[in-house]
Amino acid sequence: MQSPFPDLQLFITGPIYVRPEVRQAGLWPEFGHRDAENRKRFEPIIKNLKTVAGAPDDYEVIIFNGSGTTAMEASIRSLVADGEKVLNVSVGAFGDLYHKLAVVNNKDAVQLKFDPGECIDPARLQVALDKEKPAVVTLTHNETSTGVTNDIQEACRIIKAAGALPLVDGISIFGGAPSHIQETGCGMYITSTQKSLGLPAGFGIAFVSPEAVSRAEKVTNRGFISDILSQLPRAKKFQTLTTPNCTLANQMYMQMDYIVNQEGVQNRFARHVQMRDRVHEFIAGLQGYEFFAPEGYRSPTVTCVRVPEELTPAGLKEIKETLREKGYLFDPGYGKLNDALAQAGKRAVFRIGHLGDMNMDMLNKYLQTLKDMLKA
Image (cartoon, rainbow, N blue to C red; front, side, top):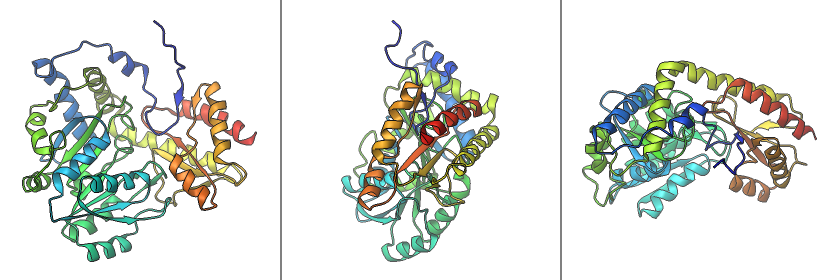
C-alpha cells in the first residue's frame, strides 16, 4: 500500500526531515531486547552518542522509551528530594515545561522567568540563587519556542558555585552544536531523537553524572520509568529498562554511525552554523522582519522571526496552508507565544527549523519559496 499522506519537507522544529537511508533502516529486522542482537545495536549507539556529546567517560547514557519530556521528568523525580528546593530557569515555553514538571510532581519549585526572546541574565540568576538557595536548578540550552541559545557554560558555573546541581534541557540543539557537558559538569544533560539527530521521535536521552547518581540515592519516590537508579543497571548493559522501539533502534544505529563516521561531528556542527547564517542573511533582506532572539544568542538549529504588524497569526497560518500545497511544512510560530504576544499588543513570530540532516540546497529552495509567499 502506498502512503495516503503527502511527503512534505518539514521546516518546523521537530519532528524533522528524515533522510531516505534512515527511513529504509526502519525495515531492518526486529530483535529481542534482552538478546545478544540488542547489544549489537545499542552498544554502538551509546558509544556514538557519547562521542557527539563529548561527555566524560564517567557519565552514563540512559535511553528512555518516550520523549525528551520523559527524561526531563525523570531528572526531577530522581534528583529533587523532599525538603529541597528546585529553581526552574525559563526563557520560554520549554523552560516553563520544566517548571510544570516540578510542580505536578509536588516539588518545592520556584521559577526565574525571563521574557520570551530574552536569554539568561547571569546577574538575575545570581540574585535568585542567593535568595532561594536551591539544591537543584533546571535550565534550557536551546529554547525551541524563541530561537534563543543560552550560555550554559556561564550559567552552570554560577549555579555550581552556589552549591546547586544544574540540569540542562538540550533537546533541540544536541547533534547540531556542542553540548558543553564536560565544561559545565551538569548533573544531567537531556535530549531526544526527533530534533538535530535527524531521527523519528521515540527515545529520550540523558547523560548522567556521578554526582547525580549519588544524589538520586538520597531521593525517595523516584517512580519506575523516571528512576535513573532503575534505569542504570540496564543502561550499563547497553539495554533499555523497558521494551524499546526496535524500528527506531535500527534507524538510530545507522544514523549515529553516519553522524560520527561519515559526516563527522565537527562537520555537522559547522553545517548547522552555515544554515543558521544563510537564514540570517535571508531575514536581513526582508523589510519589516526582525530577529526575535538577541544577537550573540541566536540558535544554530531554529530561527524565530518577528513579522511586520500587518501579518497576523491568522495570516501566518494561511501561509502555512499555501506552502503545504507546494510540498513544505511551514512553522507559523509557537502557538501559545503568538497568543501571548497578541494579548500584549505585540507583533507575531514565525520559526524556521534548520536542523538535522537538512542541507543547504533544500534550505535555499525553501527560502526562495517562502520569500515569494511573504512578499505576496
